[in-house]
Length: 552
Image (cartoon, rainbow, N blue to C red; front, side, top):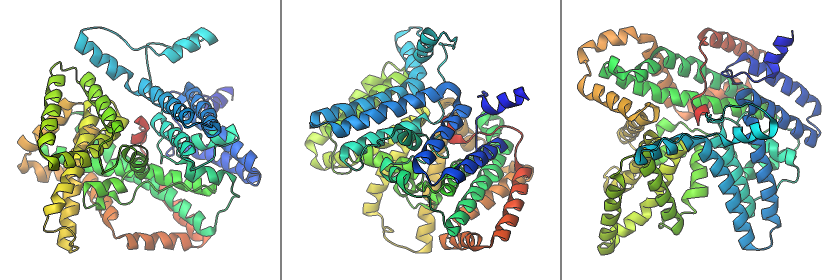
């Protein structure tokens, strides 16, 4: 009995609390039961959800919950200080402090190994990163945590961006600072979206902390639909095609034909969408059951007709965050600012350090000098550079947000290049502005294939792996084996076709069947939910399948 209680209450490495586990739904049932008793008292409600969220994060990340508490505490008091400061210079210094603390923590846990490894390559040293937080804890608390291993806290990229937006919004006067640290902690740590988004703006969520609970029958139906829809995306589509095909190919691309590598790429585009959008569907649905409205994070992204439009539909909370807190402050599409060139310099230095190639500074310096000379003699080229440099910087930073490797730099750079090239093309395109079916199909087809192509560097483990995939597709396609391979993996390919068909269904058709479920009587919802749970259980893999964006 005691051992069972420990399993329930204590952190267990390798067993995070995620939506596809029965344990999570037991946890949520307890949270919702207590919530249904205290929901009318807003301060008690917020405090309960804050402590429940801390437990959720502890079960997912162990003692990294202390890092989350530190972030909550520091930004809570900095936000109050920013609002109280009577001079602009003090406000800016405090904002700089908030951003610096958050980015330093993020950089330490996310990029320490890459900086150290590449520094060692360049200078021939043998340094090893030390977990200073574990070292401090051992000194002050007498613990025995390992100091030579730095793990990435789950969700740190998400909640640091949330707290940064809070401090900046207080500085900009969009919101007033939260008076109660428990309320602020609830905003930062709200468990449905804590570890994989969507990234929630303080100006959107904090006003909800002080509103009375409200949930209509239609909203209940919508929440239930989102939860079932998200679980279906994750378990039936994402996990099944990953376990039975995609992971095998990406783990060893040279063991598979070019056709299999190509189909794995198309499969991964579906998997990453089903996995990530499935998570946010569930998160939005769970939050809605408790009366909180989270922003949508996906809008049929593979219906996009250009790369820029894709990023308005994919991971919307991150794209809009980068736009409002990075792209526009840098000057948007008007010109490069001092902030732009500082950011670009930091990125270039980061790339140079990561590469470990001693001649890269010379190559980059030559490119920068050439562009400067051309800009000096060509006002049009200078104007073009000013209009597009912020796009490239934003997309490169977006790539680095996902991870500190050449793979993500290339992936972010390709997406930025795709936006810039489209901006040039639309000026001369004879099809720009036309709305015929063929034009629409062709633009969506090109965009989807370009996005899928860039995923080679997003999913691949290394540059070598990416090169192997490209080599197999271009040199070892094995056309004669296509019928045999298709037959062998017919279940996976059939599910991929069904998944893409559902994605590309007209929006009004999706609205129709969602509306039918929402308006259906309770007994019908119970039957549909029961059948859905039974089917999901049949597809549920015995192997643990974390959500893809947990790693970010």
